[in-house]
Image (cartoon, rainbow, N blue to C red; front, side, top):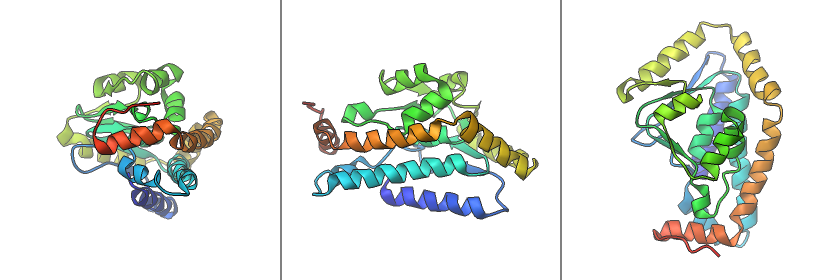
Length: 234
């Protein structure tokens, strides 16, 4: 996820927000990976800039704006996950309302391996799955496959890879038969009222994310990723 891709998604969700003909959105991907997270090579290049801290804050704000645009979109979002969803990729899955996964899906939060903090993924994990599951992924470094994701409630349906689009489209078609106003109010109730503290926690998480990027550990972690070597954290 480059900065350009992040902005393109923000723009797309803004268009969907205003388009009354759109009743549901399917978020999916091309290729064997749903989303491997943010573009760490791009982040590493930013760490060399004189105004690096300001750049981190800009990136964190853009990531926050994308997640908030998904949560506030008055139409259900179905994540069709066929392959790994890592780091911020997992955050986008968690910001979706419904999740259809294939057996190829897996979910992981690798930020600490690079000296970073998943400031937006962690609040969403705690909101959707609880603090215990959030700690297991964010601190324990464990990975969840599609079967366990279904058991935890992260994935609502698990279907074969060649059926994932058809299953997601069928669900979107069913949603489209419901009242638009009822869906809008129901989603708002879930994300803005039941999850009243979520938006505040996401803002705090974005600030922590930006701060962590300016540490020596992050500089070393990003450099090790680009150099394809184990990190040597201070």
